[in-house]
Amino acid sequence: MPDASSASPHPHPHPHPRRLPTVRAGRACLSVLAVLGSLLLAPLSQAQTCGSGGGATVCLTSTGSADNIALNWTVSGTVSNVQVYRDTDSEAAGRTRLSTVSASTTRYTDAAAAAGTRYWYWIKFTANGASYNAGPANAVRTTATTGGMRDLTSTQLAAQMAPGWNLGNSLEAIGGETAWGNPKVTQALLTSVKAAGFKTVRIPVSWAQYADASDTISAAWMARVTEVVGYARNAGLYVIINVHWDGGWMQPTYARQAAVNARLTKFWTQIANNFKNHDDYLLFAGTNEVMVDGDYGTPTVEYYTVQNSFNQTFVNAVRATGGNNAKRHLVVQGFNTNIDHTVNFATLPNDSASRRLMMEVHYYDPYNFTLNASSNIWQWGSIATDASATETWANESYLDAQFQKMKARFIDPGTPVILGEYGAISRTNISGAERYRTYWVQSVTRSAKAKGLVPVYWDNGYTSNNSMGLFNRATGAVVYTDLVNTIVNASK
Image (cartoon, rainbow, N blue to C red; front, side, top):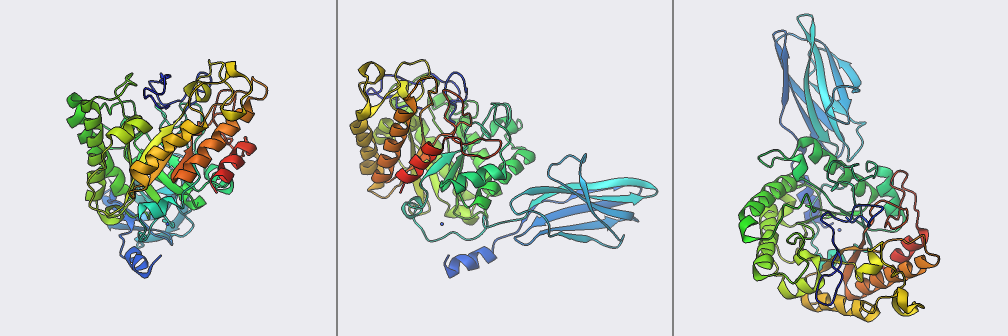
């Protein structure tokens, strides 16, 4: 969202994160020790699942490694016609039979499983003339996502991450992954993003809608997020996952503080445990644009004190899970990710890990140019030729000054900064408008990189007028080639 400081007179009115394509744009790093550490990591497995019938019980366990997925099962009673099935979801309908094995066999190795993809398995057996199933048990064949953590500070890591790209309006969509009009995320898309020159993908994620009343996240949803993270890592990208807007439950008030911190602890404990063996190419970002709904003014002491507590809760929860999470690079946010509020009110959480924190802000100034589709402001900066189509503020000097504030306050003392979102909508209905959008994106990207921020462009998935998409989400093809090249080149 745009800065809502006193210097920014156009607060963004969204109750949901920039998701509508026709009204406003949706926003949404080995040493020997590391190798040894990776050998000590526990394999990715799950508790056994059992099936009973005809006087027999079969209990199945699946374990993923870098080489395969190993299935082991126990048998109580007499069975025959034992078959191994697999699918990419937990529904038995449409599953594929991998093998028929002898009744005395109690293990099977799936060496054909694709790395990074979660699979569900069943053992179908016959007992006393009837067929029964044990399962499903699920596992992921691991990739380079598992391993040790390199001896890198967050500053050293950040230097390898630019430019970045947002997988916006997909996994954070309220109502389901495709509810906001984008297709399901594929390996082809993330492979294309990497091939285009991007080094990082930020994946906004919703969790609350997939959790039960006790805030236990659905196993199927956790598996889907893991699968998409796998796509990104298979492509060679750094990955940032967060708890995004998520329906707006993270209200930074004293009245809501305890409840929000409890839910953040529950969510991040589960997320961190799920990914605890992943290497340092995976980063966690605690929240997104935390603010009191509808209040874009300067935050009160209450508001920023509570929001800072959310950051501390996040760090505590992740570190407590151990494994690679004891040293994982974590990203915390300033109030509403607004630069001025971050500079003025953010406090870095206490952290048991040394120099493994980053700060996140966003940039959408000036709002009328970047996000307001109803505005007649379509030119920007020193190249503008029409004063009536140009804002009188938030030009190149303002942009540089904003990023300089982050450099002085955080980067120079040793805390790198992620520019987690920035972008401007297309105005295909106005001849020549793309020139100014490209210049704005170039200026922001170049200034961010020069000041030490990691620029991560917001792509909402839509490529029609008034949208911010760069790629065809269905095919992975680049749609705005010039804009992509501008971002990549300005990040060098």
